[in-house]
Structure formats: C-alpha cells, structure tokens
Amino acid sequence: MRPVGLYVERQSPIHGLDPITKLSYAVCLALVPFVAGDLRITFVALVVNLGLLVVGRVLREGLLALAGVGFFLATLFIVQGMVYPGNATPLVSVGPLVLYQEGLAHAAWLSARFINLTLSAFVLLFTTRPADLVDELMRAGLPPRVGYVLLSVLQIIPSMAARVSVIQDAQRSRGMETEGPVWVRMRALLPVLGPLVISSLVAMQERALALEVRGFGAPGPRTFYRPPWQHRLAWPVRLAALSALLGALVWRLAG
Amino acid sequence: MATGAQPRAGVWTTRWTTLTLVLIPVGIAINFVGKFVAQALKLPLWLDSIGTVLAAFIAGPWVGALTGALNNIIYGLTVDPVSFWYFITSVGIGLSAGIMARLGFIRSTARAVVAGLVVALVATVVSFPINIYLWSGQTGNVWGDALFTALTLRGVPLWLASFLDELVVDLPDKVLTVLIAFGLFRALPRRLLSQFDLGEAGHRRTA
Image (cartoon, rainbow over all chains, first blue to last red; front, side):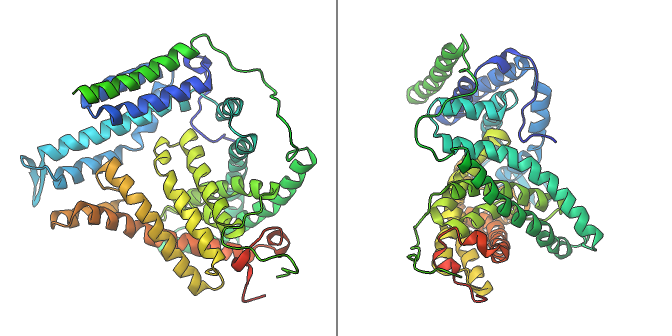
C-alpha cells in the first residue's frame, strides 16, 4: 500500500538532515518572495531550492510534481494578461482577446512566487518521512494528542483508500454506474461514501477504547521511542534560512 | 434519542473525550477520500470537506474547526503546500457547519440546504481575500475564472469579480457537501451518536 505524501526513500545529505531544520528552511525560503516583493530575489531563492533538490536527489520527482500545476499557471497568464488593472501595452491579440505586456509580467511574478513556495516545500516533503517530522515536532513541544491526530491520519488514509476500491467494485457489481453524464456519476457518490464513512466511524469507537486501555488519556509526561535527531549542520542551516528571510526584509525596506 | 437527564448541549459545548479526539483524524481521512472519489468519478466539484462538516455535525463547532485546521496542515505537510494558506477557510467551514447543526439546521433536508448555503457563503467570504492576495483574484477553477475574466473585462471591480468567481464554485460544492454529510449523519447508529453532545442537532424528526 502506498503511503500518503511525496516522500521518496533515498540516501542523500538532505535526507540525513533533521526534519525541524528542513521545516524552518522551507518556511523561511517560501516566504522570501512575499517579504522581498522582488522578482530577482525570487529567482535567487528558486535557484537555491533547485540546487537543494539536486543535492537531495529528488529533482526529477520534484519537477514531475510541479508539472501538475502547469495548467493552472497557464490560466494565470491568460487571465492576468487580459484583465490585469495596470494593462497598457498590447502584446498579442487572438481574435477579440488581447494579451497585455503588464499583465503577463504580473502573471510571471505570481507564478515565480508560487513555484518558489512549492519547491521550498518540496525540499522538505520529498526528503522527510511525515512520521519523522511529526515525531520531532512533538519533541519540540507539539502536544502529544495533536501529534496522535496527525500521525493517525497518515495511517487511516491508505486503509480507507484501499477500501474505496473494494466498495466501488462491490457496488458496481450490483449495478452502480460510474460512467456517463454528470448526474449519473454524481449518484454513485453515496453508495461509495456511505458504507465507507459509516464503517470508519463505527471502527473509530473501537480505536478509542483501545487507546484508553493503553493509557492514552493518562496524565504525566510522555517518553519517546527513538532518540532525538541530531545533525551538526542543524543550527547553521536554520540560521542561514532565517538570515535569508531577514535579508529579504532589509531589501524590501531599503529598496 | 435518549437524552435522559443530561443537560442539553449549547451551541459551543464540546465533550473532549478520547472518542472526540479520534473523530478528528477520521474526519480528515473522509475529506481526503471524498476528494479522491470526486476525482475518480470526474465530478466538477472538490468535495474535500465532507469529513470536516460531518465532524462538526457530530461533535460541535470547535471540533469542526480543529478538524479543518489540522486537515490543511497535514495536507500542506504531505502533498500540497498551498493548502496552508487556505486553512482559515477550513476553520470557517467547520465552525459554521457546527453552529448551524447546533442551531437545529440539520433536522430536515430543507433546513440542511439552508445550512449548506451558509457554509458556502462563509467559505467564499474567507477564501476570496486569499485569492486576491495570492492569485490577483483567480481560483484556478476553469468556470469560475472564465466568469472572473468576463466580469473584469466589463468593468466589474476586482474584489466583486473575485468574490463571484469563488462563489460559483463554492455554492454547488458546499451545498452538496453539507447534504452528503447530512445524509451520512442520519445513517449513523444511535449507539455511536449517544456518546456525543449533539444539542439541537440530535432532535430528529424520525425519532
């Protein structure tokens, strides 16, 4: 069963870095363009992110995942090219539709900011097992109950997704139609979701009992199964990411 | 429904038990599966908040809000970083669905439609400023963006065009989401529901 998320199991220096450091990095670098408000700075951040995806040996996977939003970015160029309020210089015209230079430049800025946000997150997501990230967040002070919620989502989704196909097959063998016009496909929603949701909610009661029996609600501190994740570059990387963000702020205020 | 001697829940009452806590990840998983099924059936809707609405119906507005918030956090941490920005939308959906349920708006299908309209309006009001900030008003939905373009070219102000862009997508999506959650809620065994404070949501016509 395929686990949830984008994580790719591989050996690389980025995979070896601790999750909290990578999370701090991703947050700082994703915010750099929003703070700097400058396309050139955004390109620098983009290049840094691409470089780290290469070091993390996940560049191919990252670019493939990014291709999924290509259609949205294309609509961004078309719509902004037509309707951006600052539009003045016509560039291309297709029939009655005119694309303006200012709108296209604005779309380029929005897309660069978005691609940078996505790639910053990819540096974390492709190289970090979600369970490791939640573990380290709990060690850093996330309440264990919230940690449980996040971790159990990761376990429940694959098992529910597997049950979807079983239920779909069962209902299809009873004559449920999954192809055809929209309203026909819409009618297939309840026969699939109904058994799935109700059985999961009933199973939830058993899970709650099992947790109670094992001291889930007990007071007192919690201990960890795994030792803390230490890395000698943890603090240098965190500080570098933070100074990049501060640098962006200075750039904004000075420029 | 055997409410017995226990005091009836108000709009904001939450019973924080282990069961309530376990409901949250199940709700998030239902959101995920709803989206998955909608994509598999090639429906022109998101249907990615059925679990948030259902959790809000069962356990109240706070649990709905928490389910929504954690849903977008876990989604942002595993699949789609942009969903972080929209976590306030999910909180709004959970809160409004829970409030409407506790005010007695899921007692009949007709009332559930009203609840769906309210949830859709809340989702739109919270989302469209984020759309303006991130995408200069677009939503990424083809129909909504086509409307947005047509309106803007006719001189409609950006904020109004963006609001309507989001509304045409959210209105059918959230009304259907609430109706599906309503149908599922009614089908749940009473033995399960009796462990939560349902408030006005518990008074069913069919009782």
